[in-house]
Length: 226
Ligand SMILES: [Zn+2]
Image (cartoon, rainbow, N blue to C red; front, side, top):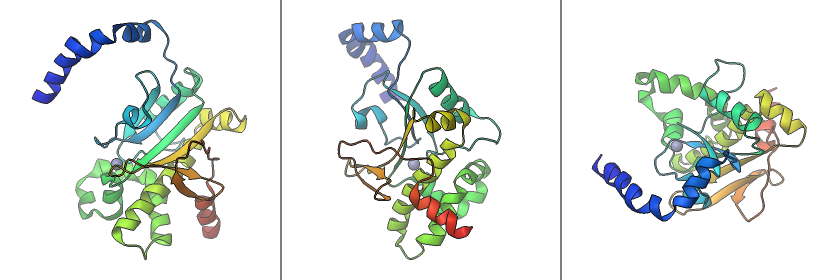
């Protein structure tokens, strides 16, 4: 904890005083974030750093595997946060961001000890579609390649889960809300974005490629199962 305590003291003695006006302004006004940013709990992801945004810009949901439980199950923190962000804060952009070397994805795919982690095992039920898509489409890939594919597919699965929430669905259908799928590569600093017209992730090039509720790749898989 020493590093954290020293950091708090440095924040109070140096960082806050040098930006006091900014923080006082933040406190006075109602927050008006640019986007809801849903990402993994992994400590190596710093949403404000990789998007070069400030306090007040991103409304966050973080959990193991950047998972969005679909509407219809027990109401949890994710559903409440999504609803609040859209209906109260007026957010009109949602980013689901997976990342490289995701421990949650690794565990979901291959961890033999998952039976000893009942909470994690239950949580990953919300990514069961990811698991099945990976099994059906990527069996021939190396473990490293399969992990990347799983992480990307999981972003699409979670975008679909997201679209089942009534507050999301109604604003999507009205064309008032955009959802984006990202993959952050920790080692290279690259951020890839799902491009629905190409049906794959490619480097974010300055254009925001919104994704519709049923991403093409997942839809094809679902259709072939049907
Ligand atoms: Zn992760």
